[in-house]
Structures are given as C-alpha cells and as structure tokens.
Amino acid sequence: MAILNFLRTRRGASLLLLLVALVAGLGLFDRAERALLPATLAQAGEARVEENLARAAALFATARALNAAISVAQSASVSAGVGVEGSISPGQALDPVNDLVERFSAVMLTATVALGGSALLLKAGDAYGLAVLLPGGLVLAALALWLPGRWGRARGGRGCCCWWPP
Image (cartoon, rainbow, N blue to C red; front, top):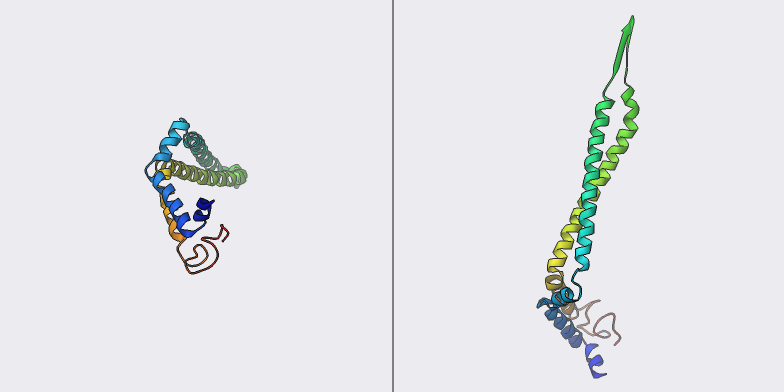
C-alpha cells in the first residue's frame, strides 16, 4: 500500500517512468520481444505492407499505360471529303473513360506513396521504437509531471498528474 501511495506522488511517478525508460533504453524490451515472439508482429506487418506496395505500384503503372493508350486512341480522327469535307473523331467518346483512368491513377499514386511511407515507418519503428522512441517519450512524460499547468502540478493542484487522484 505504501508503494502505491508513493507512486501517486510526482516523485514516485517520475521515478517509475524513468525506470521503465532505462529498461527500454538498455534494450531489454527488444530482447524480451525477440525471445518471446521470434516472428514479430512488425515483420508480419512489413511483409503485408511490402506486398500491398508492390500491388499498388503495379496498378499505378497499368493505369498510366492505359491512360496513354486511351489518349492516343482519343486523338485519332477520320476525314472524308467528296464535295463536302468533314472529319469525325470517334476517339472523343473515350474522354470520360480517360478522365476516370486519370483519377484512378492519381488515387493509386497516393496509395503507393502512403504505403511507402508506412513501410519506412514500420522499419524505423522496429529498429528504433523500443530502444530510442519509447525511452524518449517516457523521459518527456516524466519531465511533464513537473511542469506547471494541466499535465504537471508543480505549483499546487491535485495529485501528481491529471489521471491519478490526489
């Protein structure tokens, strides 16, 4: 009970956050994750994102090739002249399809960029997440407990922070 009361203080909460940050910074969480989960969730997620990235890139390339083919077909015209001269462009009927393919290719470009960013963030998170980002966030949270205002209660107020009772 005394330990719980100590953890409800700013000092106790800060020490707990810094202790977890130290454990994470030493790489103990990474070692435990790799020992308990040989095929990590991040690797499975990476494989799925890479697969979807390849599909999105292939669809984007296909859409751009189809757009180019429709544009060439759209520019074709037929001219005839026997006394009265005229020309017909039957390819103009493909204009709505061309617009649709252009919009689809823009959506696929956006999806490809988003999936590429996701793959990059997954790799960075797997490499640096538990060893760098988690300890950094915990140290910032421990420092925030000592700030005046909403997150910290350095100048009076209730409890050590907003989610624990006094």
